[in-house]
Amino acid sequence: GSGEKSDAWLMTNFLKGLGYFLIWGDFYLLFFALHAFVVGPINFEEHLQVHLNVFFPVIEWFKNLNGFFQAYIEFIYTLPAILLYLLRFTVSTSIGVWLVKRYA
Image 1 (spheres, rainbow, N blue to C red):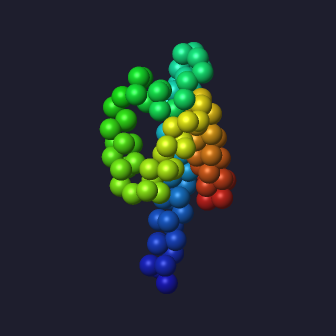
Image 2 (cartoon, rainbow, N blue to C red):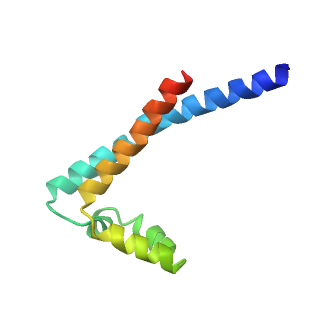
């Protein structure tokens, strides 16, 4: 009935809005990647500690939750910061473009 159409319309609009958010909401990652490039080859842990210190305690808290998170985050810390920022930007923007094309 009418309620099912309304629910489908709401979900379609929500997913389209989420797609736009993923496209436009991650431009700050490009600035982080550019900054990581300018300061030179630096791993993700050092970049967080020195330049984005506000996020470091939160990530350390997650790291201490269990052994899986600790192993995962310690691996991520060793990767180049620019690679992580660009990869995250590419993945989230691609998902956003797909959502907008699918539900527009």
